[in-house]
Length: 334
Image (cartoon, rainbow, N blue to C red):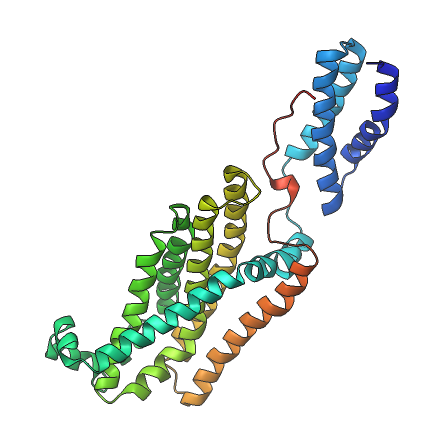
């Protein structure tokens, strides 16, 4: 191979890499370009060492790569633009991309909740096997455990408690998906059954209106968040079974990163539902107002996903981290 022709063909790429390395600030596109050029130049260096042993060329490329590696691995300061990009494109696109998984999970879960609730409400023997009559009375009577639960602690402490509880449930659903999604199902079923059992006991006691007035304000966004986590967890498990055109490892890495993006979003949605549960659900507001607050929060979330997310997804965003934040492939000899 002619070294002069090799240099003439690749010198523009090396020079561009050197210029990007010296820039103090890079756009997201320039950062991606820097990484791509660094990897391409590393392959060129491997080729020179194996087929064109030229000490001067090896030294030049080694120096260029050392500088670009330092630029790539240097600590980067998060800027508001990065934060804005995360919330306006990456997070909504990731949620929209997984919409069929968590949408179907939501539909099936609601059917299960309704089916178990109707069955228990019409089957006294089944209810009696779940709880003793005295326990049921303490749960369902006016001023009973179901109602006082929402005032069982100061609002700010209660909000933190429900947030952390739902946070761990959602993350368990989401990241246990790596085990083929199998652990997701019992966690999801347990949550569905919990809602159904309380509802059945309250309806049987003639206090179904109280049940829905207390569960709906925060429950809409809270349950949606759990269903999103479960759906994404199942998607993660399915990726191991059917990775598509990607290698199984590459597919799992990508879907895991996107799941992490969604997990950050769920921290916020569950925080919002926790605040509603602590400050709105037990408040003295009229029932319609309390449910209206929950409905607005749910509508805001769905609008965020299906308007902002759809737009970002159609523009090519899938919610994955930038190329510069991904693990680089090991350069290979061409």
